[in-house]
Length: 398
Ligand code: PLP
Image (cartoon, rainbow, N blue to C red; front, top):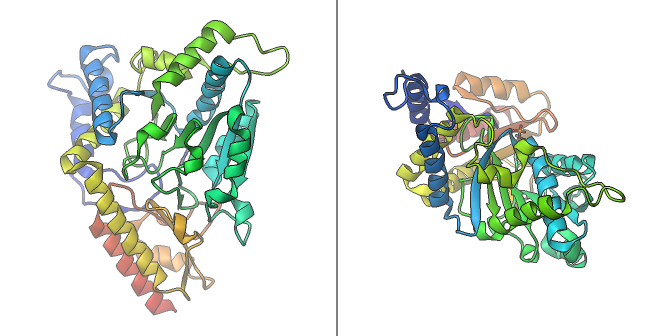
């Protein structure tokens, strides 16, 4: 049971550590010598419960999650998070303030845009705090405006804001917020989508109301989403259910949350209100164990910074050949997006890369060009191979 180490730069589902997959494959057949695979046991068995608990503990350790926050897992992906966050947090605000609040969205790329559209579709009162396209020269995503440009809006809406939503790393456009959240968000409930950069760098969990991350990029396989939530928000949602549900329908639409996506229900049932995809969870736990054994996030962050620095430096050294459509201040360390300025070379680039077994480099269909996703599982060696190819290709085709 083995494979040649891939160099796959796909954005997700993404390459995983080979040792994790080997262990997962064995456990899919026979878990802990039970004569049954991990996907065949009840999600309420003692083995499954122990696994859920260990996965939570490992995440708490890796991210240094404070006691003020809880961790849970839900079926689905980032998109189910867009909907469940909107309804759950809308209710939390109503319970605390006795009135309907407004959700504020910081739109920096297509994933935060989609999250906003979903809140609107569910008829949650929401507002775009800023759309980053209005701050760029070409009207496209590629910059995160300085907080001086939009903190006034936060200040003026502050008392009405049920939450402020941001996508920490825009996977399609290659745009990442700094590891420190803007100061003007200190007094609001920050909700962040970390689907494509969770566990890539240190963060201060205490600053977030909710963190949501689909698994299929840095932490595992598709099908499971992890949530980290402030406990006070859970109590607020429970209070809404007891005291406010059904009370606002006459004049304001307040959607209730489908039960499988109700946050307090998930937490009270240890992420097993309904059947948790236990194999997917096991893979996530193997990724966590692997990261802990490697030296934790600190070590991973050093590696990730080195990989991103190398690739951006190489692209930047051929400014007449490559273009990076993202401002230097917010270049993603996970998804490196670039184009070739000369027409007609894109296919040649992809083919040349493939010959060297460098795969998954095509940009998102909405953006074009190229995207090298250099998640935790991509080694410095793989990124070095890519950087060498990027350099060679420019020299030969300039
Ligand atoms: N959020 C981000 C940052 C993503 O990159 C993606 C998918 O690539 C999603 C949300 C949507 O995830 P899913 O396809 O699991 O719904």
